[in-house]
Amino acid sequence: MKNLLKSYIEEAEKSRKRSKYPGPVVMISRECGCSAKRIATKLSKILSGYSYNSDTKTDVEWKWVSKEIIEETAHELELNPERIKNVFLSEVKSSLHDVSTAFSTDKVYDADDQEIIDTVKEVIYRIAEEGYYIIVGRASGAIAKDIPLKLSVKLQAPLEWRINRIMQISDMSKADAQEYVLEIDRQRDLFVEHVAGRKLNNNDYDLIFNYSTMQDDYIVDAIVNIMRNKKMITLEED
Image 1: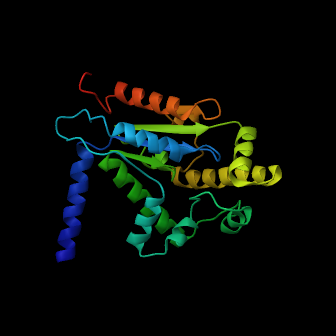
Image 2: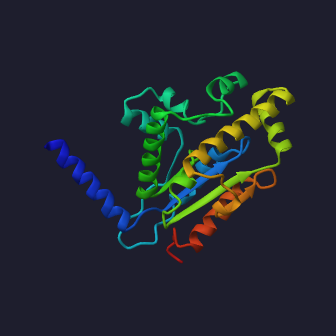
């Protein structure tokens, strides 16, 4: 009975929150070679100095999450985090062998995989509803697309530029770097397509940046200004 009551309270709380003030949240998708984590880190620090445009909430710290979603999912399902990582592409792997052994181009998700995916979706949606979060990857843009106060961002760059960047940071040959970038992109797209039920296109994002021509600070400034215009954040003088 105690567990039943706890579950009821939690569900009631989620329903109440969904009907009132879900968000604000920023979700960042990226092609392999584009550093979303650097953008998320800078953005979280700047946004923490802003306030949310609502009299019903107090200022809070903005945080960014990525691998934490895997950890929370593993905790809820009582699984090893590595089991979660094998379902969808998480961190940049150290070698091509790690990628090729974890995935295939014709990935078919079984029932256990689907349970993990469903939990990942629930974890991401709870984070997006709670607000004051920047979510990196994990198909978050597709999962939390109906959150009113959200901004969906995509970082992309020409393939050749991304290959050269991976060569620089990973000490790979050009051939290995190209194979790596294409495989990472393919597997991310595969997971997102499974979650969304279709392939995504540029219309699914609010903002798209060419990471090869834009400095991090320019991207962050643009995101902050858009959020102000959308009334996701506000300054005292606004």
